[in-house]
Structure formats: structure tokens, C-alpha cells
Amino acid sequence: MNILWITGRRLDKDLASQTELKIANSLSDMGVNITMVSPGDIPIQKNNKIDFLTLNESKIIGLKTISAGLSIKKTLSGVQIKFNHALVDWRMVQFCYSYLEMEELSWSLIDRGPPTFDGILAQIQKYQWRNSWKIANKRTEMAYVVSEAHSDYVENRTPFKGKKIILPAGVDKSWINQKGKKITTEINICYCGSLDKNRGLSEIFKLSKNLKFLPIKSKILIIGNGNYVKNIQDFSSQNSNLEYLGKITDRRKLEMILESCHIGIMPMPNKEIWNISSSIKLPEYLSKGMLIIGVKQPGNIDGIGPFYQLSSSNWPRDSIEKISKIIENGEWEEYSLKSLEKVHSMTWDKTAKAILDSINR
Image (tube, rainbow, N blue to C red; front, top):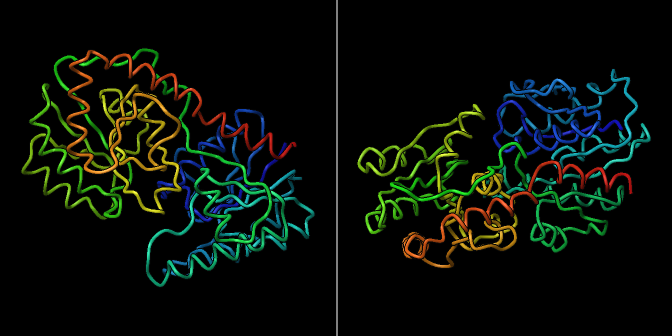
């Protein structure tokens, strides 16, 4: 099978594009021939089994997606591959659906997340997002979303009546630990992901202040990049139990750090934009046998299990009480093993299989 994937994300720079690359890699491992079309340069960590085509993109903010979208037809015109199906990012639907139909190529909209924040550009994107779903409603019978809450969000805000397939974030099977974690002399707590001020990261500072109440020495490790880095660096310079490790792009190095951690933080607040999300950090945490603390909301949880120690209100305070109780009761390794059992249902190959099954149906 030959699949064309047209995305508006820069695969060489956009952190969120990792989910698309992981799904594409898994499809490739299943014998599917993938051609990915995107703005920017070819990703450094490319898979030689995937063909990458790049779109010309303006450097002017506000014109990047438009300029890339307008170059899709020219980019694809020289491709000789006979595709069986196309996956089209909502950002690119309006620019290529007529061309795909002219080529008699069936396609589906893929939405890894709608526009989230405020501002003029965000308002334009929200219009484009709704318009893309409107086009999909008339032109295709199937689309992909990241969660049940995301599916409901689309249903309540767009006219789309087709089938929506859920493709949550996952993790590589090779990342999954075989043994549960034990607590010995120190607890490492980590946050790994975008360091954006809208993600509730300031609550991690409160957690840092509360670590002194734990029965075992503890430390917080923060990994990532974003507009909240300076705040984290300033706090870290005055609090020895919180360490900022910077942005880590080497996946092996990142895995080794997560290997040393016992608890993963899901701080994203109980707001609509986070309620509908599917975060890649959750299955990565679970793959290392971690327990999960943070805000109890749909986007921070997948399924059930004792390894979820989330709180509806003051999670930096409640987490200390929950962690202390688990240590006192000697339940840590048991809960860690449960997280490893759960994550086997959250691997990228299962996400990729959902795509193949829906296309072949």
C-alpha cells in the first residue's frame, strides 16, 4: 500500500511533529510505503523507508501555511507513485482537496489538535480549522482525531458527520521496561515536554517547595523548550531540588534520563484545549514504569490504574500525601508494574494499525 501524508507541521523543527513521524515509522514497519509532504527541511532523524518531500514556505509570519499549501500541487506533480490513500492535515485540506480529487485519490482529514490559543493569527487558524472540517464533511467519509473528547469537540463545532477514528499518542515498544521500579534512596520526578506558560508549569514550583515533606530525598528534572524556560531557570538557580536539563533531541539520551525517574508530571490544567489532547509524554512516562501526578482531567489520563495519582484541586499538595502513603504501604513496585502493563496498549504500532484497518475497511 502507498500512502501520501500531507502535513502543515515542520517535521524538522516542530516538537509536535514527533507524533506524526512515529506513526509514519510504524506504518512503514508494517510494509506501507509512506510519502510525507511538509514545509521546512527533511527531518534529521529521518527513516530511510519514508520518502520526504518539502514545500516552499514563506518566512513571513501568517503566510507560512498559505505559501506551503499553495506549493503542494507543484510539489506532487512530479511524483510518479500511484497512491492508495492520502492523509491530510487540517491545515492543508483547503489547498489540496481539489487536486487529490482530480487525481482520483481518496483522502481523509487528520487532526492532531485544533488551534488552541488566542490572538489574530489564532482566530484565522480557527476559521481554517472549521472550514477544513466543513470541506471534509462534503468530500470524505472518514477522519482521524486524538481522543474521545477531541471527537466530541469536533462533533459539537463542525458539520462533519463521517466516521472519526481515534489515534492517541503512543510510545515505541522498545522503550517499555521489563521490570517495575523500586524506591531506594531517592525519588526522581520529571516533566518532559513543551515549556509553555499555558501548561500550568508554575505549579511545579509549588511541588518543589513541598518536596521537603516527603520521607525520601527527592528531585525534579525538567526537560524541554518554550516561552517559560527563563522562569524555570530562575527558580532552579535558587532551589537545588529542581534541575533544568534543557531541550534534549537525542532520543537515546532522553530515554536514559526517563529511565532514572520514578514519577511523571502531567500539569496541564483542566481547560478545554488540554481536555481534548493526547500527550506523548504520558505513554513515555508509563513505559518507564512511572507513577503519574498532576491535574485530574481527561487529557492527562488514558484508562484507569493505581499508577494514576492525579488530583482535582491542589495537586502539588495532594501529590506529597499520595506519594508518602504509597511508600509507607510498600506499594511502589506493584503500581510501577501496573503502569508497564497498561502501556502495552499504547504503542505506536497499535495507532498505525488503526489507520490501516480503517483504510482497508
